[in-house]
Length: 467
Image (tube, helix red, strand yellow):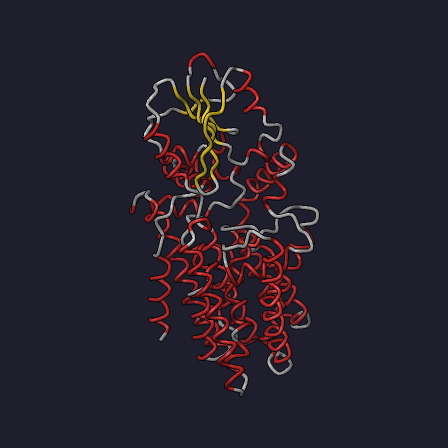
């Protein structure tokens, strides 16, 4: 059965995988294509605000499979399927075969998990190493004094790789310690083994710590220079956690009318609340229920509180918790005796996934930014040799550079010479963040350029200016 689920997971992850790369994907691909491996780690990664493991793996991957949209995204598909497999093994071992099957089906058809399994970013890699870390963590707890060396080694390796993948999972490791240390503080032998494991993990992280410090300083500088950036990277508010729960269920789709969107999500949040409460009550007789839900709560709550001061809370950074989320939701449908309740809840959860997937795949407005379409349109419709493409910030040029055939050159907004150009295609991408005063537009208009047309490519706004 699990192999059929994996096949289903693969099929739905290949549908529409050839969408245009969005900006951050293009930045990653160009970096791993153009940098030497050592420079990728020491020069590129410090300014990327992420640990370097994904970039290193992708560096080798593209040299085997190329840099087109499908090739670079297949790496995330592999990690996504690996996550399904480990999720099944974990739940089968610590809960039941039925719950393992249902949880894995829900994860295989999860619209959010599918979306990020199709993205050339580190989120699926993170999810894979996170569930492997949790698997070995539960092994260590359940086996206690009888725990073999393999479980500790598995925990050390998977957790180290996790911490080299993304920063938010550091809170997962913190949660593991908040749960396990109180259980073993009187057991000297277990305490020594655990602290020794943590020491090995820290030892392997030491080479990265200077770059982490550099990233923190760069991030602080960016936040000061561009204050609105905080709202993008994850500033906490009262609706942050409800949004997280909603996105976990319906993925990347949304409803433009915020009132209707809010009303629609209330039943979803209530459903999650009821199923989670049932799972928690069952924890009175099963210690592992409490461990799992504590892992989920601590790993969300701690960064949520921190995000009121440091913006780190964005729902997509918590995708690595999806297996635990579905583990909790699937408990009631396989544990309760009433057939109507069990099958109705299972039906509802599957219908949410299916409807969300259909809405996403058939409504292109939910798709990624269409840099491919924007670049193709400009290069096919611009015949004037005295034309150029301009961005409000040079850091946003990667999408254009990835797709461009150099028919219309990039123009620097800083060293711009108006007399050399007849037409300018101005990309307004994240203008409100990186050019809040709209100075680039004002400079063009003061130089005698007039706006002729406006085009939109799924979130990419382009204005054509002519003299």
